[in-house]
Image (cartoon, rainbow, N blue to C red; front, side):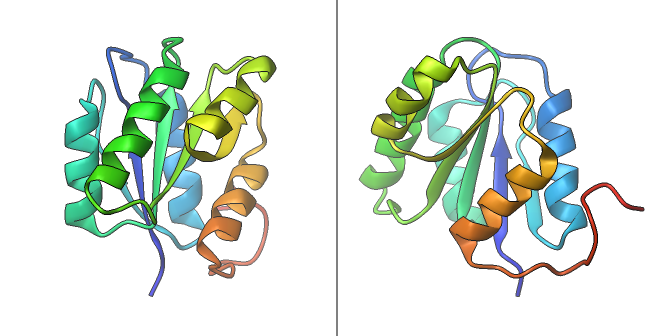
Length: 140
């Protein structure tokens, strides 16, 4: 059974193209992907993660609030006794913020410009799921 991944857009950020590209890349290699849509509250993201029994919550953040939203999401998952759900973050993230995101609870960070193959590999590493579809991301 493939791992389930939740791709979420927390906060007021209304740009979802990158999140949709990542969601499709993960789906194309065999993950089950749930996409929340834009402008989600952290509490709703956590509720969806629990309801959908996901292994990973992927936050796509372009608004500049990445550290605070990541910390709130990781904390809310722990409070819901779901601290085993990995939180990953992608978006407009300065290199200097990567350690802060790790400290806030991010298992992996994918700044703008990260290759899709690297995102897929990072998620596979977190879920220990082998490739379901051979070949590079984006074929087909």
